Amino acid sequence: MCPNTPGDSYTYTHIENLFEDEEWAILEWSGGGTFVGDRAALDPVGKPYTLRGCGFFHITDGKIRFQRGYWDKLTWFKQVGVPID
Image (cartoon, rainbow, N blue to C red; front, side, top):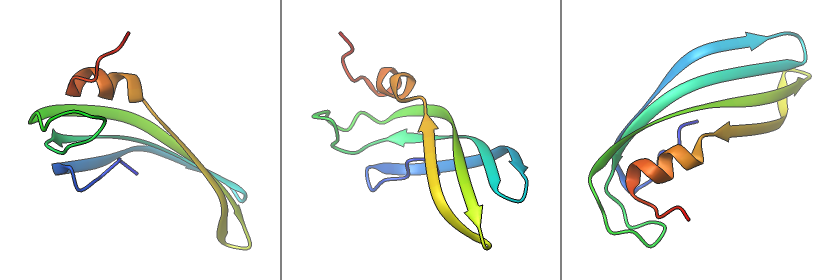
């Protein structure tokens, strides 16, 4: 769930909470890594970052039919040096 990408030299994800019933599951997670890739017009910066996020899953017949995730992109931008106007 953490945005693990080829530009990250090391990433980790930790499950903070998991809530579920027969139709829905909600996963709260934290994670982080070291930004080393060429993304968002940035040079590799080697900066560590931490993130928090959550995922919502709608489950029917034992299968995930819908998933939506949210994570704190603004905090990530600030940590890796993306200019914020």
